[in-house]
Image (tube, rainbow, N blue to C red; front, side, top):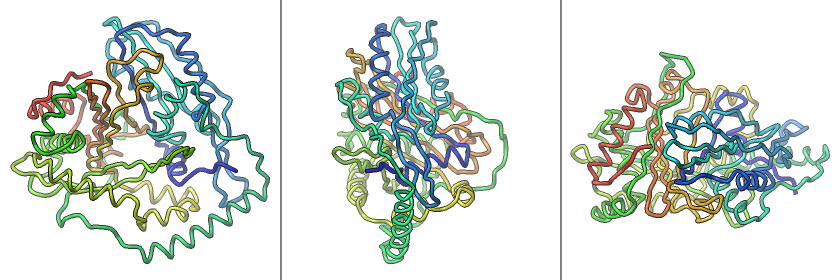
Length: 430
């Protein structure tokens, strides 16, 4: 069976190819000891011969979806001999390295010693090659020595592409008909604050959006959540919303739209991207977001709706058929989320210890290249954040997509630190 690109795979590929905006997923492990380079070389080999070892080949017939084929490129581990003073600056530089999901490789592994006497390890994967689920599974399988998810070298003839193009046309037609009859989903409360696009203006110089990362005490986080009738995830939503409130990006007088990614990955699922999303409205009170019980109830309802067929999802086969020029005009004007919370939960033991010894903390995040203050301003975004748990540590990574309310990393870091302090959560910035 030919492994074809899904709609989401194609979306990230076109973001890079058509819009010049590559999206990558990055994990960064911090260790209190040196790493063995031979063990890292073995890890890289296993990653390259597993589900990350794939590249894109475009269809030979118009309308046929591109397909995945095995990639023979296994990039060597990039070892920096000099100690790293600022781990986050080093991680940012690693995330900017060029990846190629078409020619391969679509991923990169790098390590460096730290001035504190430990080590830091980075894995960057093109979002075309895989979402967070693939990212985690690839490392776990590599540690276990399990070869899985690598595309089979299936021979493809021209009539295979003709058949796929015809099937895609049929799926697009059915999707349009079903979308016209599908329910539009539960609306958000009137006046809910959302992201909106606007005219592109200001500095067009390419610039990295500000990012702040904190290692938080997991027990204190859980205690603070339980005291307000919530969970670790609902407190995550509240913290990110309160950072937006503190910056003035949103008003305390109206509900705020929060977006939540949801994995649709099944057992033995070889898709590169298998994620959908739901949303809810969070209502502040007195400039705070402390009713975690309400957020928890709304989150459960939102997650329950994730399996419903929305008109947007039904139109995906049609969108995947659109030529690049049309995609450039439509996708280039779409807004980014105002508040997106991606809780990756407790990381598997093998993932937290990719070379056998557990990391002290692990940060995961997605980063977008090719951005400028003018582009971010036009897309109308706010904050995007990721939360991971490793033993007694919760690692919070926050990316700011609003150059006016979060002009630099220090501003973002200060707002985040102050917000965590109001919840009595001990936090150490990276």
